[in-house]
Image (tube, rainbow, N blue to C red; front, side):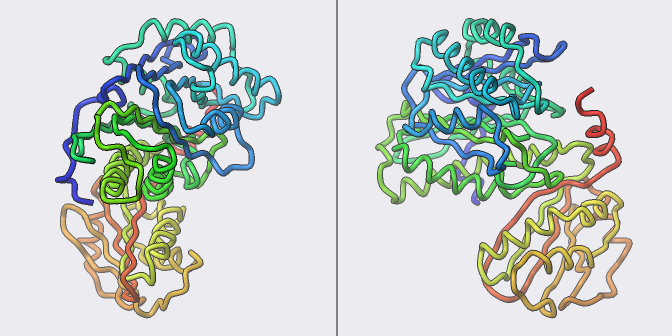
Length: 408
């Protein structure tokens, strides 16, 4: 992806004209911000991609229903309590959140996307939450994007925001985004939330198509710990204020929109991996020479998901056998006797396996690469033109410590 096509902008979701946000403390958590609100002054085309976990939280079910019409004006998100595995009361509470936000913003409650993240199996404190929604509506501002990003955090250590400008349909189009995620991160909407705003004019059907593709190549290509959450979602709102030519066909303008959306999704996805619970290293797994792009992505995710690979990265051990083994159980049919493996970092690149076999490589150079905070694992199958990439982090002692006492 050519980064020269995009201009980075300071800020996040409110970098887009017509959007305001707020992040407040309503009392779900002891002291930290725990409620976020996003609002567009203009009607929006909207789309979402949701967890494939069979155990789905109430806000997932409600938001999927509300987005069937392809429009939305607002998003309300709480952190600290997931509102998952909470039965009929959980469904009622999710709808009450949408209703309260709709009334506070003077929009149809069905135009409000609802999201929650936090501890599973706990009921929401609705009195505090409903009051907080009204308070957040009163505090909406263009400057509220960072506070909103902070309010959706759980074990995250920093707010994740991004904004870019791209040329689409003959006009400058802005994309803004915020995300949260640190643990329970794995493909199929890996506990992860992502919210994207844009001023592009695009039909709901094409917006949905673009979002699914972007998610498949970004959020669905990251892994921290192999756990897919009950609450994961990525939602995009497009309010059309850029006044570009309406994107209503699968043509050049749509492909430009797709690429820009993928860029900001990848940017946010990488932030999630870098903030993986207990992580000390960020790793990109690049696969090339595969029979197809799908095969390449499948192998990349298999390697990125391997706990043995992740612990080797933590231990700074150039154990290339673990990399090749993880590629081998990916389900992709390939000839292991043609595979080359490389490690790459700021000190340079070092080949550690050739044609699926041992190589007299420099252990010192490999260790120097693995001591870096950002590492690339390159796997060349030499069996086609397919390319793919995935992102992961190391698996550390601190990951266990964090998740052994999550509820406390």
